[in-house]
Length: 150
Image (cartoon, rainbow, N blue to C red):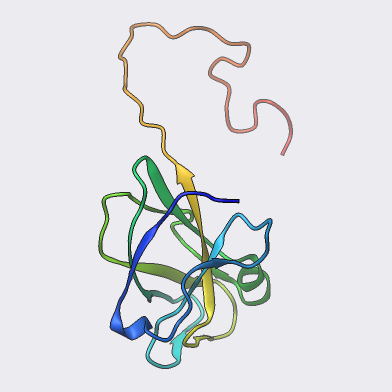
């Protein structure tokens, strides 16, 4: 399958690290790895911005969504507090991943560790139209559990 092309510039601190890649043929996300110089400890309740050593140019009309890795979340309580993070098509700085340690133990980020996944997604831009009345629906203004229990 041929898809969109993401241009990438590798920074010196990521020279020996792999580029983001799909782990399996059916994977939606590409693994992002940590470009840290040495082990970085995130204490319980702590957060850190982890560099990837990559700068990118996305295809027009796309964003890159940065999402947590389920294994890190389940085994260690490592989450992305702004998930999914959005990388806009016009951003040209280094990609960084904010990791939050919601687990009970310190978490060590090692160089080359898979820390997040990136999903390329199309963007639909919208225009706001102010009106005095909205069309009605069966649900109306009901929210916060109004359609059932739980």
